[in-house]
Image (cartoon, rainbow, N blue to C red; front, top):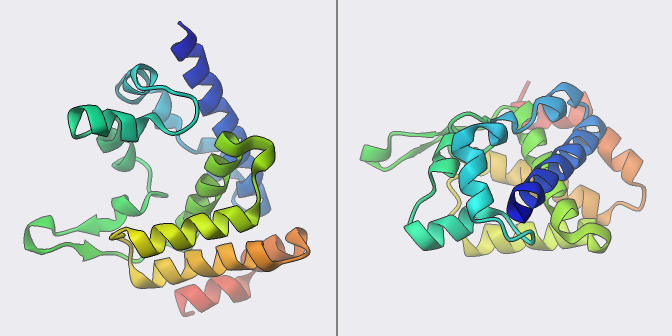
Length: 182
């Protein structure tokens, strides 16, 4: 029973922080609707089983079973995950450039995960360091332009002395057009 309520609290805390950061990034509706699939039986019950409270239950399930049905369900229904934007697995994989609004939601998701699991110890510099480590040490299946945009966003948030101005610039048409090429 503790795992049930612990996981539920983690989901709700995470959703709150995603909404918070999504509002800062100019996508409040996406933030509100974010990760609703986590309440589906496929995702919820597997995550309760592997709940630890200090990190996502998905890697724990993958360690145990070698895969996660919750993750398969989740990434196929939530376009803010870069895995959603891949195709042609039989011929080597095609990486599809993510739409800007989903990159923003992905960043809000990453920031919210950091805030959810690190709480008062959360910093934008730590998020920047985490992203640089992830980018360097993993074979990311992300379109190169999407990687560059995520990197620019994390850098901007990490080095900015004025977070309000940083968020304002990130949600600006100028910044978006750099990525979209319009």
